[in-house]
Amino acid sequence: MNDDIIEYEFTDVLDLHCFSPKDLKILLDDYINFAFNAKWQSVRIIHGKGKGILRDRTLSIVRKHPHVLSFKTASEDAGGWGSVIVTLKNKI
Image (cartoon, rainbow, N blue to C red; front, top):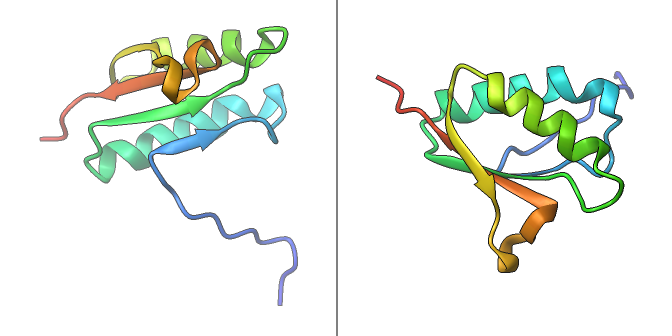
């Protein structure tokens, strides 16, 4: 038995509060790829409202990702400027 394995259930919301900014590139690439392959239309990524470190890094990664069609700040009831809605390209 390996105690280092963590099981995670993917949903259309990813909360980054427990992740380090240095882990975001791999994490977000994997998450967006998973969502794209699952044919999800969009996902919400919660980066928080703090100093903007997670937000800036998240937006930089999302902006360059090949499966991302567009992104925008979430509505107030979905986290406002503490989260981003990412619209994914259609998988053919």
